[in-house]
Length: 111
Length: 116
Image (tube, rainbow over all chains, first blue to last red; front, side, top):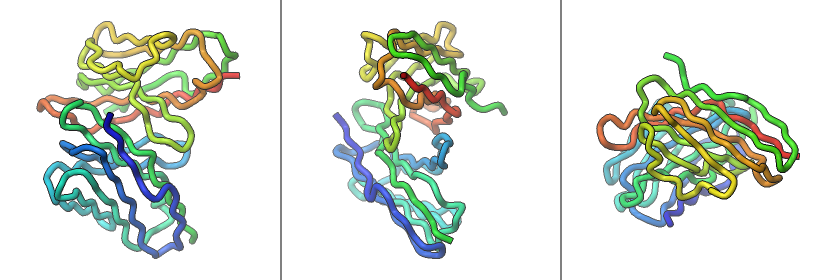
């Protein structure tokens, strides 16, 4: 079945440093979604990417979808303490019609 | 607009006991999902409903888990009997899917289950 892997599993940065998490799928995706989950909270939708090579920005966050639609990345510029949490990608397979979540990257930010 | 509502928020039971979780999706959302999230992992889909029809239950352990969404609105997930390994957070999510493709999933706060 479809597998979605995320790296790194954990990332600890100093406030102001940049952060990137990568998402890789074993199969080609129809779309990919990114979610953020704060400690003790539930996943909250951030963005959806659909087109090959698509790049979207939300303030300090930049999301990319690979040309082959099998990988994606989330980059945060100049992290802040409010960025702490676990970032999940969820890939929608072209055949199964369901999204598979990665295991997330947990970001901690030292002030 | 009210979000996805789940109850209870926390549940502690002894193994072999039954337990049930309830979810009320966002009004008008025809797609409802139940996920299980273990510590340090991403949500794992258990079952997905389109209105009252279960369209994907391939990951649901059917020997002990059951779910229903009788009127295509709220849903119940049941475990009977519970095992120690069922301890996890059970998340419900909903989406509109009114354009024929999977839309944003809105998650509820989850039910944190501890089986002793």
